[in-house]
Amino acid sequence: MTAPTAPARADDTLRRATEIVDLAQRACEAYGRPDLGPRLAAVRATLADPAVHIVVVGEFKQGKSSLVNALVGTKVCPVNDDVATALPTYVRYGKEPSAEVLLDEVPPRRETVPVDRVRDYVLEKEAGGAVEGVTGVEVRLPRQLLSSGLVIVDTPGVGGLGSVHSAASLTAASMADAVLFVTDAAQELTRSEVEFLRQAREVCATAVCVLTKTDFYPYWRKIRDLDEGHLRAVGEMPIIPVSSDLRLRAVAAGDKELNAESGFPELVTFVSQRVSGGAAARAAAQAGASVVGICEQIESQFAAERTALADPASAATVMDELAEVKRRVEGLKAAAAKWQQTLGDGIADLNADIDHDLRGRIRRLIEEADTLIEEGDPADDWPETERWLKERVSQEVLANYMFLRDRAISLSDEVATHFAQAAGQVLRHVAVADPVPLAGTAEVEHKIELAKMKIGKQAMVALKSAYGGALMFTMLGTLAGIALGPIGIGIGLVMGRKGLREEKTRQRTNRQNQARNAIRRYCDEVSFVMTKDSRDTLRRIQRQLRDHYSELADELSRSNARALSAASEAAKRTTEERESRLRDLTAELDRLRQLREHAAALAS
Image (tube, rainbow, N blue to C red; front, side, top):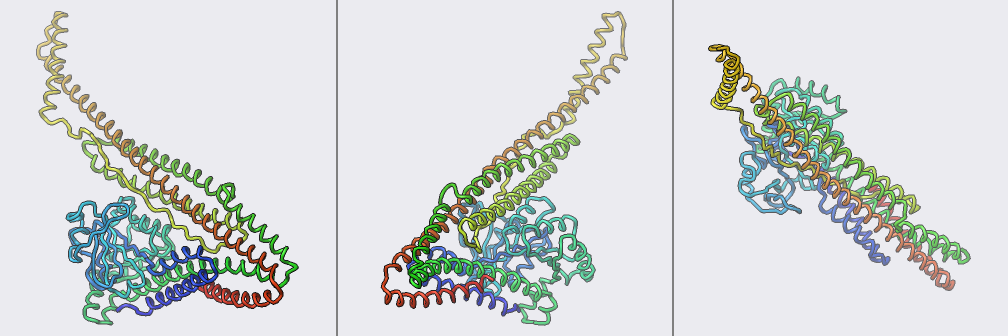
C-alpha cells in the first residue's frame, strides 16, 4: 500500500553518500592524514542510522494514535475512546517487532517490554503503572516506510493553547524534521489550534495539517474548506483529509481502491518524499560538505608541493606564503582570536539576556496572578488558578527557550563567519546541534487554608460578637442610668453580623495572601531551575562550538605543516626526482579532484 520508490530513492542517496565518505576515509589513510578520520567516522555513523523525526500533534481525541497506526499499517499505538494518550510513543524500524520503555534517567535507561503491553504505559489512566518514572515508549516494526530511518512520534494531546502538553509538543516540534498536526472533521479549526499551528510553523518549517475521520463526518469537505481559510493565517500549509479506519481495512484486505479512498497515499507520499527523502538529502549534503573540506585540505598541501617542484625558483615564495598561512592558523588557535572573543562575549551576553527575559516574564506573570487572586477567593477557585498558573508558566518557559534557541543559532552563525574570515577559506557547513530543551516545571505547594468557616463556626463567631456588643451597650446604658431592654438585643445582633462579616473578610484576605505566597514560591522555583538549565545549556553550546572550531584549527595547522614540509623537500630534489614526483602529484590531485566533485554534487 505504501509507495516503494520514495524510500528506495532515499536509500540510494544515503548509499552514494556513504560510498563517498568511505573513499574519503581511504584517501586520508593513504595520504597520511589519519587525524581527519574521526570527523568522517562521525559523518558515516550519521549516514548509517539517519533518524528522521515526524512529530504527530493535536488536541485530545482527534485521532492521532489511529493515524500513526494507519501509517504503519498495524495497531501499534493504543486507541481508547475514554482515555487519552499520556506519554509519547516512538515508532521506528526494526527487523522484528519489539518494544522498550524509556525511564527518566540521564541518559535514558531502557527496559524491554512485550509489544502487547504498550498500552499499560501509554494510556493516561495506566501511565507508569508497571514501572516508575516512565517517560515514553519506543516500538520497532519491520515496515518499509520506516526503513530509511523514519521515526514517527505519537504525542499526548496539546490540551489547549498554553497548556503543559502544548509546551511539550512545541518543544518536540522544534527538534523534529516535520510536524503532522491532526484535527478531526467534527468542526473547523479553533483559535487555539490555529495559534498552536502558527507557533509550530515557526519552529519547524515542514508541517502539514491532517483532517481525520472523513468516513464518520459526511460534511468533511466543508470543514476542509473552512480549515484552508484558517490556515492562510499561518502561511501556506497543505491539508490532507484521511480516514484511518478505511486505511487499516484496506491494508488488511489488500484493497487498492479502498486505500485510495482513505486519502493515505497522499500522506504517505508527503512522509516518504518530502520528509524522509528530504532528510536523506540533507544528511548526504552534510556528508558531501565534510568530504569537500577534507579534500581541499589535502589538495592544498599537494598544490604547494607541485608549485615548488614545477618551478624551483618559486619555492621560496611558496614557503613564505605557507609561513603566512601558518601565522594565521596559529592565530585561530590563540585565545585572542576574533572567533574566540565572539564566542565568549556572545555566551556572556546571551546568559544575561536569557536571565533578564525569564525574570521579566515571571514578573509579569506574578502581576497577572495577583490581579486574578484579588478578584476571587482561593477557597472557591484555587484549583482553576493552579491549572492556569501551570499553563501560563509552561507558555512563558517555552517562549524563553525559543528565545535562547534562536539567539544560540545566530551566535553559532556569527562564530562560523569570523572563523572562516580568519582562516581565509569558506567553511561550507558547520554541524552545530540546536540547544536541547530543558523546560521542566515544579509542583505547586500552596499551603493554603482553603476551607471556609462552617455554619457552626460562623454561628459561634456571630454569637461571640453579638454577646460582646450587647454586653457592652447594656453596661454603658446601666452606667448612664438608661435601661436599654430589647434594644440591647438588637444592637447585639447588628454587632454579631458585623463581626461575622469582618471575620470572613479577614480569612479571605489571609487566603489571598497565602495564594500569592504560593505562586511566588512556585515561580521562584521555576526561575531557579530554568536559570540553572539555561546556563548549563549555554555552557554546552560554548564547549561544542569551541571544540568544533579548535579541531578545525588543528586540522588546518597540520595540513599547513605538511605542505610546508613537502615544499621544503621539493626544493632539495634532483630534476629527475622532481619530474617523477610531479607525475605522481598530478595523478593524486586528479583523484582528489574527482572525489571532491562527487562530494560537491551531494552538497549542492
